[in-house]
Image 1 (cartoon, rainbow, N blue to C red):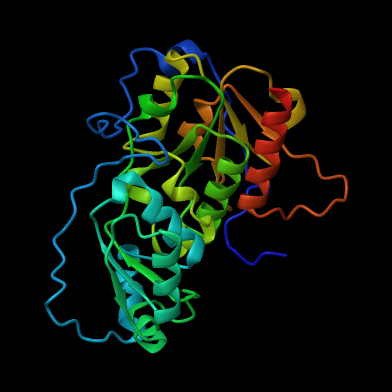
Image 2: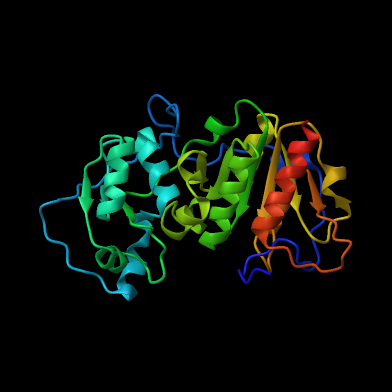
Length: 308
């Protein structure tokens, strides 16, 4: 049983009444997503086109204590799968600082996995000092700028399934949801810009490279984002443990936004009001304790099954 604090199945308090959808969505303005980069996504990875900060390879870098490394974790990707995915992402070409142990560096060079990045040899202890305590880097560390995201319209063009995360802040949960969303063929992830972790650090490690391959739209307001998606033909299904309908009953073949909330508050009231329907995951075992990332995987499977 997961001890992560965010779950999606706990029954919240009284849910708001859902009124006329036309009043809710009338006069809505487009979501506050950031504009798309020139040229759109690149083949083999999505291109957020972030503005890189200059890294001086010649300047000395003092070793960090573990307590200080946590504050800088958003600038690091570590572990074999996350680092290799980042190196393969065209948006990363020419960016960042790649560090590896001698064995890992030889492997990267031998298999042609550097994609033009220069490898700096480092001892295991030096890599440990750069990262939060307990980080399993497997001899590979990539210092980069976090991905900035794409425009909402970039992931809403061809139908399918989109996952929207309402104030999920635990990087392990968010990373696991990225991994499941990519595995089940979701078009992308939508998060609120102010209340979501950076796509690096522990999140990227948990995602096992999915953050480099699955587009993420960071929007200012989730309710307005749902209005925009509704105008584009998308139907929003919010997960709520107290809902009357099950996921199987609520889902159909139309383009679907799966809206996931955090434990305690669940989906916020205004976001829930912009959902077309609320649905629950039936639990005949009577043990209502699904972690939100597990709930997302179940919902993605069910949505994929509905679409054949």
